[in-house]
Structure formats: structure tokens, C-alpha cells
Image 1 (tube, one colour):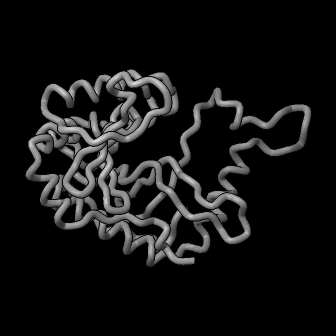
Image 2 (cartoon, rainbow, N blue to C red):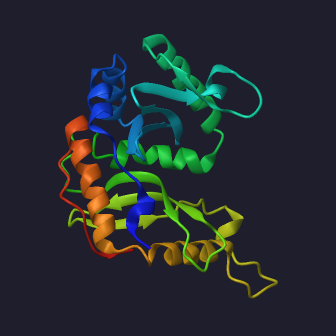
Image 3 (cartoon, rainbow, N blue to C red):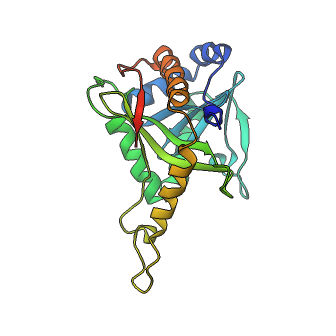
Length: 231
């Protein structure tokens, strides 16, 4: 298995199109404040707010969840022309939906504290560089894809994957009446199994590309990632 399952890149046309869009100054403003966090995916860039996905940009267009406009039933991505007014509507809808999740709220709190794009960030502390990182499943696993909550880079360039759980979450505790390990340990073991086949240099190359793109879009002072050891 290769690191191709990471699939994180943004076409140069979309990079230029995003910077030229009327919404870019609004997104950049909120990113500098730590209210919005950007993350590159396969041919897309996603923007997160209050721990949930606010919108995405792909092939010259913005998309957001239909639920943010009050549509009932299963939410779907819809193409929208976002301006100052509709952007605030989408933010309010996103905040209203995702603020109900305590785990998402915890992730949102990390944006302002650890985002490398926040005004005044020096790159001398741990930095949050990605969220909701999807990896392909290992050959002997029934799970075809898994998702780790956070990826941090330390000042020395080392990458650390982090799973977020509240202490009151029953999945972090072992049931007293059984010797079976807590569900969290099974989850972490599965993540390790999925990550192990991915070569370090593949992950490094993927995030080096991400760093370069983000440097051009939002500027940052982070060192190139070093994944000679990862945890």
C-alpha cells in the first residue's frame, strides 16, 4: 500500500480561483481569527467552523450543506454563490448544527489556539495542520477507510496524530464487569494498523505539498514536516 490514500492536493487553477473569489477576504479574515480552519482534500479545499465543515471550494465553485439553509431531511452539498450576507447565513447554520456536539466544540476551540494561520502565530509551538484525516484500511481489515480527528506538527517537524474524546465518553472506559479493553483502545489499534503500511516518505511528500499550497494561500511559518518518526 502507498500513501495515495491520503489524496491531498489542490489544482493551481482552483488555487488562483479561490484567491480571486469575493468570498476569499471573508474566509481569510475568519481564518486569521481562528474562527475558520482550512484543510486540503482531493481536488478540494474544505473550510471548518465550530468543528464542522462550513463549505468547500472545488473547480471554481463553493458548495455547502443544504441543512444550513433550513432544508429538512438528509443534508446534501449544494452549489452556492456566497457573498457577505449568505456567508453569515451559512456560518449561523453551521454553528447551530455542530455546536450541539461537545466533541466538535472541543475541536473548534483548538482552531484559535493551534491554527498556524492565526494572526501572530510564530511557528514555535505545536500547530494544528489537518483535521478529519482519512486513511485507507489495511488489507486484513474489514474497514475500507478510517478517519483520525487531528494532525499536529511539533516545532521539530514531527507529526502527531490525535484522536479526540471527552473524558465522560463511555468509549474511553473499560466496563468493570468484563476484561474487554475500552472501545477507544480498539479504535487506536485499528488506526495504527491502517497507518503502518503507509511509507513515511509518502506522508511527508503529501504534507510538504499541502504546506506549500497553504503557504501561498494563507502564509505560515511552519517548518517542513519530518515523519522519520510519527505517533
